[in-house]
Image 1 (cartoon, helix red, strand yellow):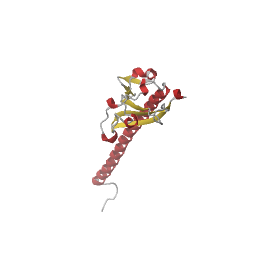
Image 2 (image 1 turned 90 degrees about the horizontal axis):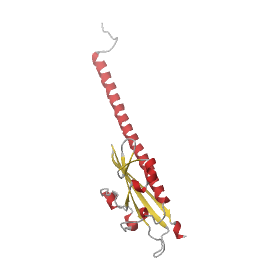
Image 3 (image 1 turned 180 degrees about the vertical axis):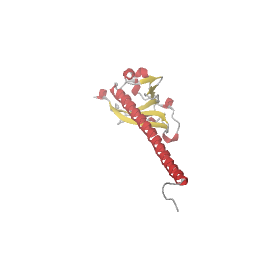
Image 4 (image 1 turned 30 degrees about the horizontal axis):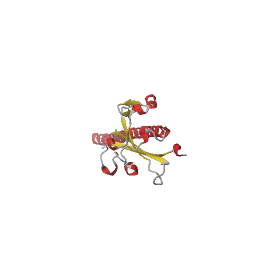
Length: 174
């Protein structure tokens, strides 16, 4: 007589193996979700930093040194220092690099370490920007200053970056 009550050892081992594979897949998805969440948090922080720097720059007088095109490249130099075109990031080529001394209000808002802003997880954000005050009509006073801010940081997913571009109106030209 055959006993059909219960499972054989082989059936139990196969069931445990299938369960283990499912749990491992779920754990892998959880790890990827945590990494993506951390990346999203870093991108949100970078966006906040870029917006803060942009607001500070737009608050400055039109002739402030932080709004001067130091390398004279004009509109063609708005991407200087960034990794556009597959080049290596080189902030030294940009018009300006973030210096905490130029942004005293940031000391109460962000953790500053050297020339970088650091978030709660210890991730640092490298910030630099380029400006262009090319007049719309040759020989006239510039009506706008174009500002491109670049923020770079590292995550487990590699180097990330964010670019923010805006215009500052020349209130002095009125």
